[in-house]
Image (cartoon, rainbow, N blue to C red; front, side):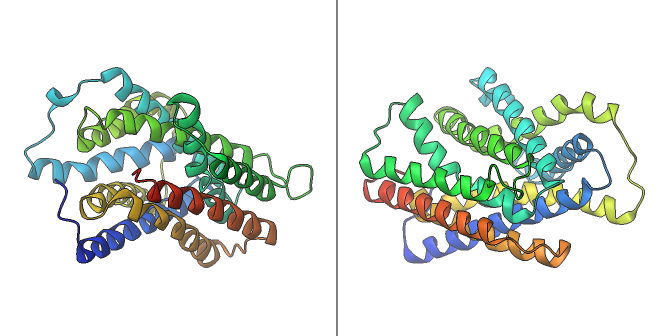
Length: 293
């Protein structure tokens, strides 16, 4: 249930969504550490297993999960498959790239959403929005540095992940018309567990240290808490108020990348990230002023 729109509620929503993006940065940091010593598919699977386990607590408190509210099982299955694939591509890219690099490419998602919405949903893009889309993609090219020694093929995984994530957002928007957000969240995580299990178990390497087990638990806790915070933030503030705060995640990822891995993003990554963020913010502000969101 949405709460009354007020300055206090908006500030509370902003605070909660900021916590969500910090959780997602912690999730990626933990995953990057884990995939240095464990198979990527195993880390992906354990991330969703622990996510589901941590979700059982609020589910039990609210009376459990009911499948009766599922009206589009086919789309729910597609969303679970997309979530599994996106997470695998992201964790695979993190084996080779800095957190700031994968995070910067991910910020192209609002730009891609606008492009796909125009193509698939026939939403109108005016000249200003088209300009922002083109400039945003130019920023992604600056981050990728194709044809230079700074180019790493793993950046293509991050780009594919961003494209799939944009389509994932459109699918989520479609499901929100008929399905409860909590139902969609639970089914996607459970679906990912089932889909990835055969592949994860085929490459299984038992974690050998307490730190690995602790970080595995942290991926589930950070992922589950982040999604829970996102859902609650939208109860307190409209999407148009919360959307620009997505970009603070680059600060968390850059800081954690430096503190944990000693990574310092290069000038191309910082410049490209700035271009992508500026383009995305322009699109978000245009949507806000047009009354969409």
